Image (tube, rainbow, N blue to C red; front, side):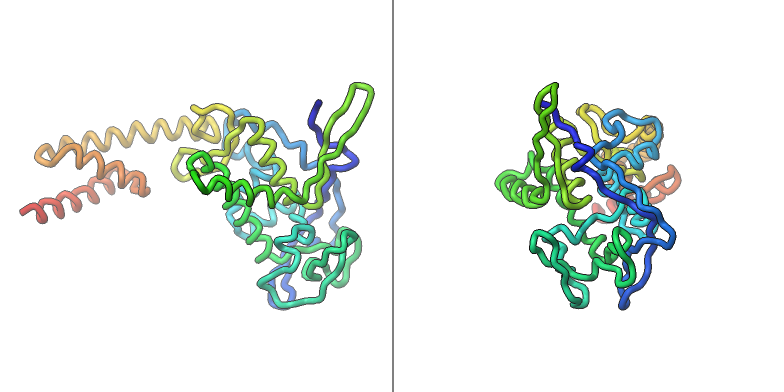
Length: 302
């Protein structure tokens, strides 16, 4: 049996979007003259290999882009112009648009009610759908928290069951579909929102033995997918840059320790590593901060 996304059941749409204000709330709306484009979000690019550059990870798959989204307006627009709206009107957790001024409600074919915050009052068809920026940002935060819980589940202990229940709640909008052709049976997926796709892709990656990780290189921190336990970087460029930086930091630490032979060397090494983890960079700055720490330690010991 194979898993695939059937073209007749796994389509989402995207437009060109912009931010407009509605009743004092910033809202993501379709831009004038935008054309509707349909695509299959369940067929992402090859994202298991380590790319050469970090930017090669961008646009690989909606769940990875959502995991990296920083919440800035530019970042949100880049995401929706690439993948479309999240479809929050079809997600029970966001249908009521809680936290926003109360508006009237509409009813979908399933009999579920959703806020007309998701409807542009003067547009039709796909162009009428919109998403308030505060709700979009909340959905991003919720997914990133879910992803963080899933990556830490081996250490969750008694909380592992809670993490599973929460994740299963996110998967309720997805429905498996069976299809029979001459070569046999296959299974596809039907979904109601792009956010459903994001959670489904996350599940399929976990089932495939892929792990979500954050790049080890400081000042990168990109989330990436890998099957290899030894892979700690999102790209070859980050791996090389981090190795060069670590070599420099070891040299800085050795120079500091040689300059203070009368100070506990283990303590010195620990303090240098702590400062580097906190983001203190540059040999001169590191020496200055360490000199202050050493002076304070000597005063306390006298």
